[in-house]
Length: 516
Image 1: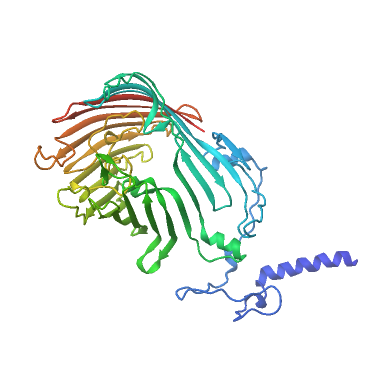
Image 2: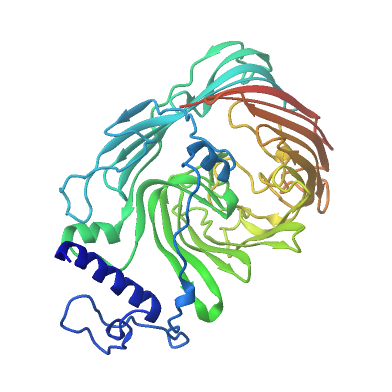
């Protein structure tokens, strides 16, 4: 028999022998160290609670046999018929596209072969145009206002970038066309008002020191250490504790766990604000002074006990010698689902330790308890009834949230739009309690409708000059929004509110928002 016919038959016999008896003993034998010959390595390190499993031939099965040709359209059905999204493109895409498929390609070895530079410059954001008629009690206005939000991204490596955010049509107020309203400071508000400002709202560098060190030393590190420095924005406790940008920095120990305490994941972040700290705590000559104070803070989140724990502490210091508003700011949050029917979040904000000079009132003291609830219905993704409550004592203050109050997430009736001065109820939780009850419906995940009733009740005497709200308040609010194309979103809001010892408020607004 020719040798060419003998060789294949020997190979087949060896395969049959392997299937019948399993792999050779030399493959299965236990080795205490890596042998010299090729194909073997030392046994893996194992936890004391783990042990190797016995080899089982029954754990293997033949490859599947496809009787029909491959059909790409049929495979899309596996993923619910999803297809590629025709996403809006950024205004500028230099270097490589923001959205792309396939391999990225090689980078440039400037700061090390293990942290290659692959430059990309992007400009993206949105443009909001609002037509509103607002009655804030003593002040009324009707205006067409415009807000332009521009994000500039210079991506350097996979983990390092330089980012800037500007609002060129916003200089405290929005660029607008005043259609009528109450004159302010004896100045008629009618006509076009240009409010131009190109100063950055945020401007910071962020990266990961672990990857930077890998590039510089040409050795892979065993840690990640993300950080940011500059005019840095932070968003903590769902924006209720921190939602602002300040001059400073942050560094995070991330993706840690603790089997001993049943903690699947936790992060810890240390951050400082050295300037542009916007808070009602620091008032100079009757206006908020964002150059008056600093803070040094530590925050963490923990996935534990099938819930989500957030905790933060900050020491806030006052640079002004004549008032001394130093104080401590603490916020705790616990979020969890119960019985598959209730999603609940409980947050406690506390301010203490402020001891101003004689004759100056405290601006940060007391506490507020916030309870947010949503009912899990038979349409859990689209029909969401909610009922949120709060109880505030004295004058609790968030750490840094700009002009937004601590109740901004309690309900839509506590939110303004940040563009036209849309009316809202008192959002300070200053010696008040109350809440909001409403329902959100998302239809087929293509539009949103919210209907809500909100209430504020005062604590103590109506004549207390230190409380922000002089009497009880209530309001009904409605919001509707819908994307009308891949770039454009339509939104409208309406509110009517009654305020004891103050005039009623009402407002209606229509907004078009373009994303790019």
